Every structure is written in structure tokens, then in C-alpha cells.
Image 1 (cartoon, one colour):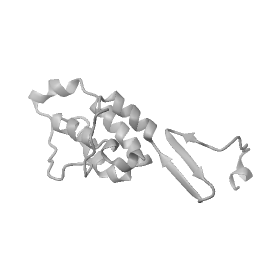
Image 2 (tube, rainbow, N blue to C red; image 1 turned 90 degrees about the vertical axis):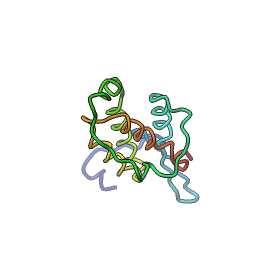
Image 3 (cartoon, rainbow, N blue to C red; image 1 turned 180 degrees about the vertical axis):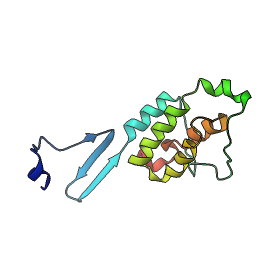
Image 4 (tube, helix red, strand yellow; image 1 turned 45 degrees about the vertical axis):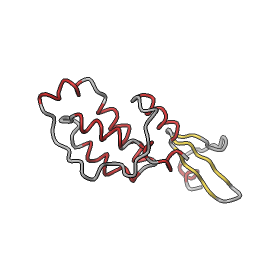
Length: 134
């Protein structure tokens, strides 16, 4: 271990959970399974999406995002759009790189988002892809 040459390192036990990622090692088959199910379940609860259904893509290909209009400002002002997009960004970087493009698009409107952005953010949630929950 090269780390031991530079720092004092002690091995406590096998790691099963680190920075919101569950780690399952299967030594006989030489595989490692990473999962963010706990974080995704927490986000689903926080954003009232427990009954969300899977979709085939993280974003509707025909969706065109635009800036917030004055009429929509009051609706959005109370939402947690920025928090949701931030959480999606963390999940995309950790375990769901297939949603990175969508999260980038949503991030472009952090200060000028509207109801369409909010709905797109909810649709891009990792629960929409069944393979993330296995």
C-alpha cells in the first residue's frame, strides 16, 4: 500500500458504507457492487415522490427549458428546486453518470427556473431508472 508510505494507516474492518454509497464486496466472484439506494430513498421521501414511476429516459427529448416568467415566480419561490438539483448532481457524479447531461441542463437555470424545470428535475430523479434500485 503506497498510502502507508506517506500516512499512518490502520485497517479497521471491511467498508460497507462510505459518503452515502453502499459497498458490497463478493470476494469469491471478485466483484464489487456500489449503490446509492439509501440516498435515493431519502430524496424520494423528501420530495414526495415515493410513488414515482420509471421512465425510459432521464429527460423528455422534446423538452425545451426556458427562463422563469413573472407569473411563475410565486409558484417556484417556495419550491426546493435548487436543493433537488444539487442532490441530483451528487447522485449523478457518484452512481448515475447517465443523468449528468440532464443535471447540467437543470443547473443552467438555478436562478431562473420555472414549473417545467421542476417537473423535469423530478423526472430525472434516479428512481426513474429501475437498474439503479437493484
